[in-house]
Image 1 (cartoon, rainbow, N blue to C red):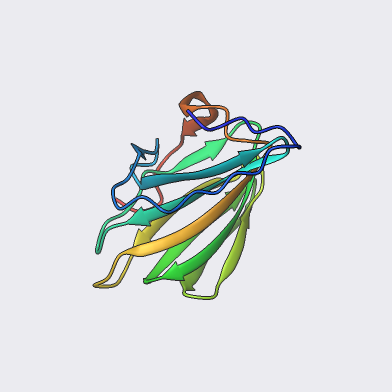
Image 2 (image 1 turned 90 degrees about the vertical axis):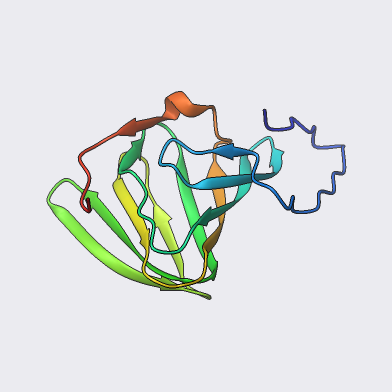
Length: 133
């Protein structure tokens, strides 16, 4: 469960060496911190792996790539694109967007992900048809 800090609390957390949970898309999630308006996690996809495709019912996200190389597929209605990601690339996942990502490199693909409002639980992610097998 993500922590629920009030606006008057200070929190500090160091990144765990082991993942806390496996996300509905099958990526490895290390929980960071949560505030009233949002939450943040560290996400890892091992080399040559592909996530499952999902969409979010109520949250939106900003992903900042910090390590590795890969691709992210995003689809909203008839708009569809694949973007190459590597350290320094930042993307958005608006609410209702179908998305899937894959690691095309030999190193882990890692993101820091900010979610608004805070992640409500696994029921938030709905499986959709995979773009990649």
